[in-house]
Length: 465
Image (tube, rainbow, N blue to C red; front, top):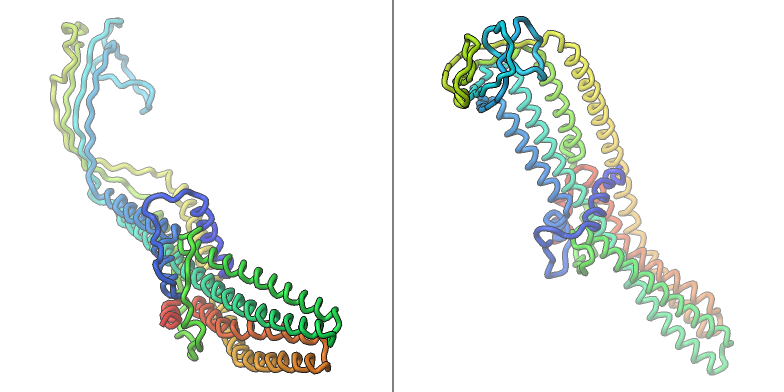
């Protein structure tokens, strides 16, 4: 499941690498990094974490925006027009096309035009809303909690990916050391075989075989060095330092891993489960807001306004320019109630959609819980297997060293072949790699177990002491 969980973070990583750097420069370490120091650095440098902080800030602003619904509204208007004053008796439905006109109907129409003006301030306040505003604020607060949970999930995923990349880098460095030791042994063996061939105590084919084995060991070293450098490059990306050379200090990881497993944690506190629970809380808050949306809308209003016109009531006109200023003032206070009776069906359908989405999120939460339980079980099995392997690899290494010594002695005595020596050397190299990686394998398994339980801080501290 973690593989799918890493996908959004990996996408963000590639995006961060592709785009040019902007803003503050990332922090570059001045000393080799321990495992915990690498994880802490990734939390400060990785672009996706910085983006999650911006998402949290946006959610905070959304809460402030929802709270502005409690404030009164104040609208100011100033208008001037030049129009005819002809009017007709009768009714028109409210519309946004025909301009409104006031005054009595005149018997004679005219094309003479006059100025008109208006200015005013309207103050409106909704004294009570039957809980809608509070429900909207709670929905915004739930969205803020979701953003916080999302930030914690990204931090957790980046920390886990950084930890795994660090352990892979250490493993590749140990493989390089084993390859270097094998090159040195094959170099000495090649010199020994060369002396025997020169003394005609061994056929020339043995010398060719020893030379080929030496060349092969050197190629293996080059490949190991390439993989080690590539692992460090991947680690640098998770540290937000793509393209910058970094060094690591894995001394504690090369010792004995802790004997105890990470403390058991409730899966409800797992960042992935917490993020999914936050999605459920958002759905519940939205559904509650929709339940309160079908309601009367009450408005307490107060207005101060003025009108001006160049038309007289008897059909004559004032001098040109008379209506440019509002000369007649008025004030008004009132209380209105509006209720869209037929809006219920739309709101009911919206509630049903949100309710189904909420069911989907709850089912997803159950799926996440099952996956986390399965991960914990698999991780415990992996820890037990890794510990058994770590106890077995010293036996493998000791036996491989003995075999390498015996095969060379047999070859020197003329009882063995160069093929036996080459096979023994390859077996020894593999045993050295296995033994070097066995303890790291326990650390990797413990990291996977801690990650499945939702907390890796304690293990990171133990790995960096």
